[in-house]
Structure formats: structure tokens, C-alpha cells
Image 1: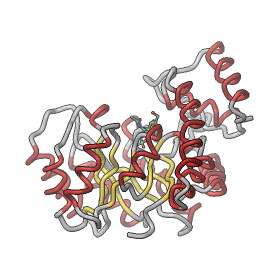
Image 2: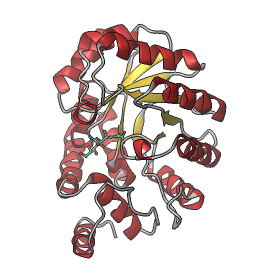
Image 3: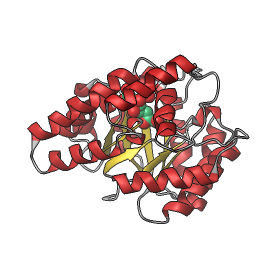
Length: 293
Ligand code: SI3
């Protein structure tokens, strides 16, 4: 699974004037991000608003991106859902459409025990011949699976890794140590990308790589070249932008930056924050200050 490495944007989903997925802007954005160094794409995750989309839309987005990307970089389809049936349906589709892997958050809303969560993942991985990357994001799912749970999960055939979105780097390292070298762990929080790489993450999947692919790609390169101080300087720089971003809903903020850069990605779906004119003016100043324009 050598292909899964580097900086992978959790793609913002471009919406057109009719509110549906925009074929042309999706292609334009994906092309642009590849030119900036994107090492793959992660679709319909948290940033991609997967849970605010219909099953058909998630499938449509995947087909567009795969068609545009061809085999240049791997495309990972997030198929996570509250119910196993939807996740299984999306997995079968992702396999047919030619995705490199699927990924799924732990099922949320209802509180399931570890056996049920394990069964959910096994049902997904048995649905089609496509590798699965589990997705740990306790801040959003409310489900905090343990290191021992992931150790067991890593032994299931076809489950090749975990996207770890928590700033608990010790827990991340414990998962890596328990699951073995072949189990891929992706850093989730962009603000600690370098810390995650230092612990042993194979790459990073995140939201701000939609707007800062190039500096993060450089950080990744410097880290692998052993130039830690230079990599740290970049992490500090991007974190100044992330500090501004955190004053807003991250999706609303990133969409506005992309819009200012000429990508008409549309507004996020409600109930995600809809920006006022004053907020747009503020983000415009941030964009100028940090040379996005
Ligand atoms: O699935 C996804 O869209 C992600 O990759 C989410 C990603 O891990 C983001 N985390 C959260 C909680 O949304 C980060 O990229 C995050 O937006 C960023 O680090 C800024 O805090």
C-alpha cells in the first residue's frame, strides 16, 4: 500500500448554482490541488459534507473525481454512515467505480458497543474487494474506540489502516505500536501534522489541505529529508492560518478562501455556518494577510 502517503486533501465538495454537485468546478479544483502536490483525495468525509449528501450524490462525486484523476493519485471514498446498509452500498459502488480504498467513521448517534462497531467494519470490508481505512474522529462521532479495539481491527483482512483525527498523539503512537508496521495511520488534525509524521504517520488526510496543499507538501518533504527545523517553521506558519480558521466553521472558511481564489465551490449546506457580508470581508483581509490572493 505504498501509494497511500503524503498530503491528501479531504476534498471540499463543490456545489453549483442549483445546489447540486458541480461537475466542472470539482474537476477544476482537483486539477489545481494535484498541481499543488496533493497525493490523493479523500471524498465525502467531514470536510466533504458526506453526511449532508444523499447516497447518490456521494456516488456521483466519486465518479467525477475518479474520471478526472484517472490513476494519477489514489482516491479514497468515505463510505461511513449511521447504518451499515448504506456503508455497504457505498463500498460496493466505490469498488465498481475504481476507488483505491474506502474509509468509514465509527457508526454514530446510537451508542454501540465494540462488538457492534467491529461487526459494522467487518460487514463493510466483506462487501467488496477493496481496502478499508477506519476513521477515528471522537470529537465528531462521540465514539472513542480504544487502542485494543484498533489492535483487533488491524487483524481483520482488508482493513489496512486508520485515519486518526485526535490531538492525542500518545494514543496515536500506541495504536501504531499495537497494530504493527504494516498498518497505515494517517494524521487527522492538520495543526499537528508534523507531530503525527514524527510519531510514524504514513501521511496526512485533512481539511486545510484544500487551501494549503503546497506548504504542507513542502513540510512533508522536509520531514522526510530530515530537515525538522524547516518543517517546524512551516507548521508554525500554517497554524497561524488555522488559528484564524478556527474562528469560523472550518468548512465555511475554506469555501470562502477557495471562492476568493477563483473556485466557485458554493456555500456549505445548512446547518453549516452561512457567512455574512461582514464575515466575508474579514476572511478577505485574512486571505490578503496570508498571501492567499
Ligand atoms: O474527513 C475529513 O474531512 C477530515 O479529514 C477532517 C480533518 O481531520 C479535520 N478535522 C476535523 C475535526 O474536522 C482537520 O483537517 C481539521 O479541520 C483541521 O485540522 C483544522 O482544525
